[in-house]
Image 1 (tube, rainbow, N blue to C red):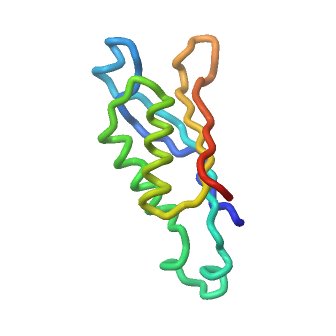
Image 2 (cartoon, rainbow, N blue to C red; image 1 turned 90 degrees about the vertical axis):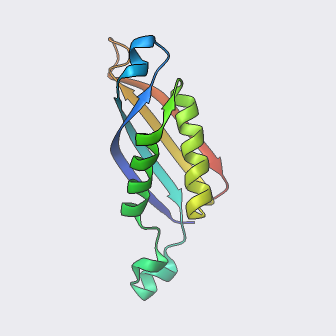
Amino acid sequence: MDTVFIEGLEVDTVIGAYDWERGVRQCLRLDLQMAWDIRQPAHADELALALDYAVVCQRIQAFAAEASFILVETFAERLAQLLMSEFGIPWIYLKVSKPGAVPAAAAVGVEIERGCR
């Protein structure tokens, strides 16, 4: 199975366990890999047959804009479920980073893998 990827997508959302975090939007950085058979869209050179990463990015940004979670883990799990369901993605790898969450680290976060290749 082929892979469509999105790297370094930044989204603003309400995320965090501390009281001060509940009233502000924070940046999350996302890296995704999604299983998708690209042979047919490549052969036909037809966007309608492809996994349109621009549309996927727009959906992720809309999800993040509406979301409000305490845990990065919850954000990742719900986003993976949504993308697999709405786009028919059979397998997804998702890395969600929260830059600046821990002063001594560039970022913290989670990596998850769902579905089957």
